[in-house]
Length: 430
Image (cartoon, rainbow, N blue to C red):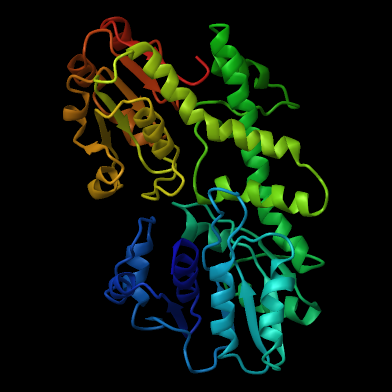
């Protein structure tokens, strides 16, 4: 019952599927869910969970003994931090648990992001050993945190079946949830779709971030240049390295559980097929190095590890808002500062609990206390709520000639508050 499983369960309940059982093995999380409270932030989720929990939606610590029409596997598929290879232990365990309960004609759906061939070569053999007739499909989840309930019902559902009957069974299930399904020719084709979606985004963001580096060296404004390159030029949609009000995607810090791991999974698929995916690999390296690049820029100007640094935004992204800090670039920024000897770190986030910030070796604090005597402040996410804070009151609290690092260009660099205060405005690509 993580982000994928819980949001899907609630949407199924909203669509009047009569009986949904969510399996959660963590005792504390299970207790919280049974009380009708989600264990992570997602817009609209608390209200929907309260509405359906204990009615059409119930929770258990194991796969139900009663036969279900469909089993949807949504467990995590992390990558090993050392090898960057996918870890499939949870997939295998969940499939084995489902295999113990299925009867003839049950549908099994794998929804976790996996390497190409996983459904056929890992999941299928485990289910096959049961001797039962079953249907098997891979149907990737592609929603964005913060809009998951909405997008689950709006985005076309990609479906890959083991055979045509399996695909049709999956279509019958997901047609109850969303308005459109897209049936592909194989399990592997559907597995590849999710990897392509996130690897493409990662690569375009990396292009913007690399352009930002060369602009910094030449004292140019990457945002200004990219905006001009895109302006009324239909063949160009270059992402901006900072915040952009347009529909053009953005570069800047790139993090999150999916965007970080999915390119590595695709790179591994390439290796297994004798292909070096150099572009995707380099793009991932560029994006992973950006937090360290920002930390070095700030540290080189402070040149004193005892100075106070205030970091704003610890979730991996800001819009739509989330409290998810998995693979957050801010964590990598913190670690980079700590490696360089900077431990006088303070932090703020509108949604991430103080305890999580404190666990990173950062002192959680309110906005005014964070700005007070800070030699550098760094806005790490694009949360629009930061645009509403009273800069004219907060900036004077900083030390003279302090650094104001606006990673996402949330603020106008020409705002008089910077010129009148001797504070140095900096950003990625500037």
